Every structure is written in C-alpha cells, then in structure tokens.
Image 1: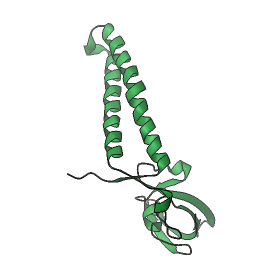
Image 2: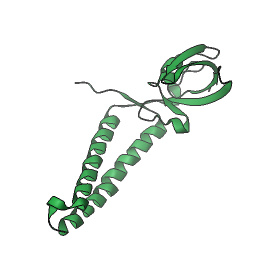
Image 3: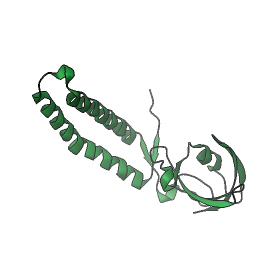
Image 4: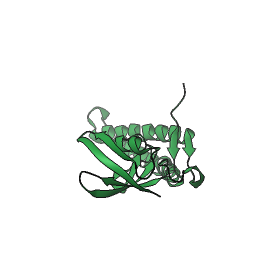
Length: 157
C-alpha cells in the first residue's frame, strides 16, 4: 500500500514538525493530567470530564499519527524546484478575476499547507488545478462551487 506524497515548502515542513512536537511534548501531558484528575472524581460511567479528556486524547493521538505519516511521505520543494515562468509548487501567482475586475494573489502549495485565508492554495483545489502549469497571459475558466470564474494569469513570481 503506497501512501500519498505530501508536497511541502520548508516553512510548511517546519510548521508540521512544530505541531507534532507540541502535541507529543505538551498536549499529551496535559490530557494525561486531565484524565488522572477526572479518574480521581470516582464513578467513570457518569463522568463528563473523563469522557471529554478521553475524546481529546483520541483526537491528539489521531493527529500525531496523521502528522507522522505526512512527514514520512513529505517531498520538500525548494527554490530550485520552482519553475520560472510556469505556475508550479511554490509559485506566487497574480490572477485577474475577469468578471469582478480584481487582482488576487496566491501561492501554490501542497494540500497539507493549504491556507486560503493567508493566500496559500492547494495544487488540488479547483483554482490551483486550473492554473498549475500555465504561464503569464493564460486565460482560463475555473469551475467552483459558486459557478464558473474566468481568470487571467497576470504574473508569476
């Protein structure tokens, strides 16, 4: 069974490593302490604190497993991997929304780093897929949940 490759920028790799370290060193201890305290309250069958702490523990352990798997399958994208003039991983792209007549700026990252509120979109998102491999001047139509948007690739940095 092969695992899906996770494409990361150096900052994305660092962020995932920091989250994993925090979960293992801080959150695990906090939740273990909460469980120990809840157990001291007695009857576990009607102990909401115990149930809540056990649920959080399960979430944390699941996230740790996910992060470890992502890091095992990580492929780091460096500056040398960013094509000049072609949209790819790590490219910062200025798009013109031809219908709204506004410019948008996005950096193309792997799905693990995707953060649209900080202008980082995944290569697997509708817009990311559509612009991946294009060059400045390209006009394209992107089907999104709200309909179809027409973009022009203005600049690739």
